[in-house]
Length: 127
Image (cartoon, rainbow, N blue to C red):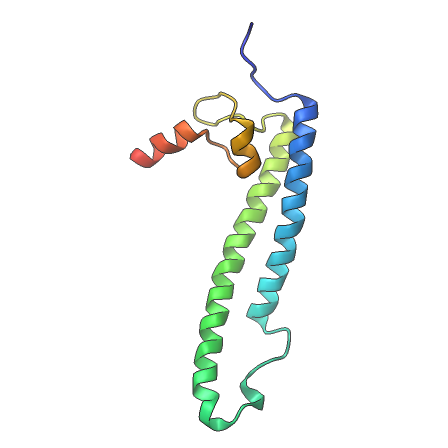
């Protein structure tokens, strides 16, 4: 029996549904983070007494910086999920870009945007 070189169309549709679910959740989270960075809720230190204003501004700056970093990570995750959808369209989804073999379904369910098998990822980390 020959070795499977790609996932079937039915399997790809299963992965597409999983990725779309994660993509929608990620976009919602990104919008929340973006709103926190932009201070869209209108909460700022304008309504606090002058004594606490310096501490509040410092905490708000740190919080915005953290939210900004998280938003950048979330955007990268969204882009990776969108790339995975393109690979599904091309029917190359789930194929390790180093070994050319199929990435196990369990890994793809856990990390749907994965492009490396565990073995290839570990080999890459050792370098």
